[in-house]
Structure formats: structure tokens, C-alpha cells
Amino acid sequence: MDPKVETIVRLSDIVKERIGERKPVLGIVLGSGLGRLADAIQDPLVIPYRELPGFPVSTAVGHKGNFIVGTLGGKTVIAMQGRIHYYEGYGMDKVVLPIRVMIGVGIRTLIVSNAAGGTNLGYHVGDLMIIRDHINLLPNPLIGPNLDEFGPRFPDMTRPYDPALIRLALELGAQMGIQLHQGVYVGGTGPSYETPAEYKYFRNIGGDAVGMSTVPEVIVARHAGVPVFGISVITNEAHDDYAEDYVNDGDDVVVAANAAADKMSRLIEKMIEKIEL
Image (cartoon, rainbow, N blue to C red; front, side):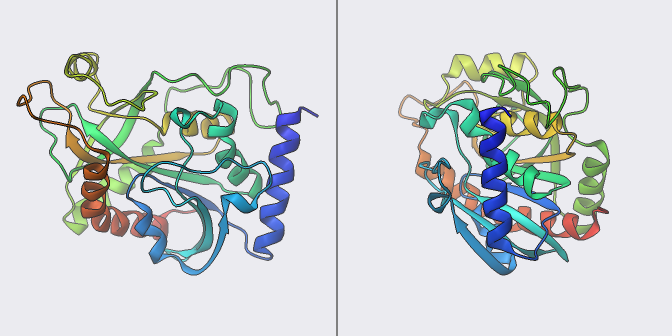
């Protein structure tokens, strides 16, 4: 067995042993400043990443670094309260390890969220954008020997974000009075924020929002045939015309994400209630 597969199986077994009879059917990744959705999880069991042997630990601002297993929207879920980023110095196999562990635990759908800069000139701080597609500027996590136990050598990415889940979100958003954009997410390496010229470039090639995560997670989920729904909270207007004293600030991003987290949390909880698994 491939050593990477052995690690995934070992960690999945540890998590399954910790959670006992609970069987998560849905995984959630909570991005920068968006961890408060975890507060809505009922009867939560918290598993800190640091308690899992060989598991990467979150170091980014706003990422607590826990798995939380419990009930949300009437379903058993496993949530990542903080993700792993490539810019933290981890190899891509570590970045996507939590997703593969959740797949090993048994999830059948994945919901990913992030804080992102809005390169689309029509986006403003606090807006929500459903991710309908992405542009990957990060190393592809499937490079190297294929893990046949998880999926094919050349997985299809025609529909990386599930059309039925997008339709459900739009329907519920309309019912709940939550405005939802649909756009393309550009995933870059970070950790430096992009230059104004890069923001303009991303917009010109079709990107509506830019961030430093999410895409590798989506690729490995789709590799394994797991449907994905993705949503971005727009935390800064990533345009290319700034005042001379403007500065992008990580703490401001977390504050803006927290301000929009309530409506995102309400939407996702309602979606989970409606998703048929």
C-alpha cells in the first residue's frame, strides 16, 4: 500500500474510533474568520489536529485547528475549524490530508468556505459568492503516483462545483433574502497579498475572487467522486485603483469575514437540512 494511503487510513481509523457510533455524511471546511458556524453544531465532539499523530496543524489567523463532529441541519457532520494552507510550508499532500481523512471517515458531500478578495468590480465587502468554477495557480495535489484507492489518474473537472447544490443555494438564498453572487475563484499560493496588477490580471482572465486555499481541497474531493459546494465571503475589494496609503491587512480580513459569517452560516445550515444524502 502507498505510504500516503496508509497514513490516510490510519488517521481515518483514529478519528472513527474517537467519534464512536457517529457516522458523518457531510464535511465542512471553515475558512478564515468563518469558524463560528461550528458554534451551531449540536452535541459537538472536538478533536484538535495536534492530537492526531502526524497531522498538520493550522497556523493561520482565524484557524483554530479542530475537527468538530456533531449534528447540523439534522445530519451528522464533520467540520474542519481551520484548514491547512500551502503557504504555511506544508507539502500539498499535507494540505489535502484532512479532506482525504474526512472521505475516509465516510462523508458523501463536501462544503468549502473561504475569505476572498473580490476582483469583480461589482463585489463589495461582506458579499457572498457561490463558487461556480475556479482557476488553479497552486500545485495540483494529484501530482505524483495516483492513489488508486481514491480515484482515477485523470479525474474530470468539467463540473468541480455541483450544479444541483448551487441551484439549492440560490433557491434558499432567494427565500431567505440573502443576496448571492456566482463567480470564479482564483486560488494562489500566498502568503503575500496580490499586487494591483495581479488583481487586474485575475479579473481579465475571468476571476471574480482570489484567495489562498480551497482549490486543492476541491480537486481531491472530486478525484474521489465527492460532490462539492463552495462559497466565498468577500472580505476586501481586490481592485487595482487604490489610495497611496491603502494597505491589505489580515486582521481586517478576519473582521470582515466574521461580520458576514451569520448569513453564510444560516444559508449553509439550511442547505444541509435540505440536502438529500
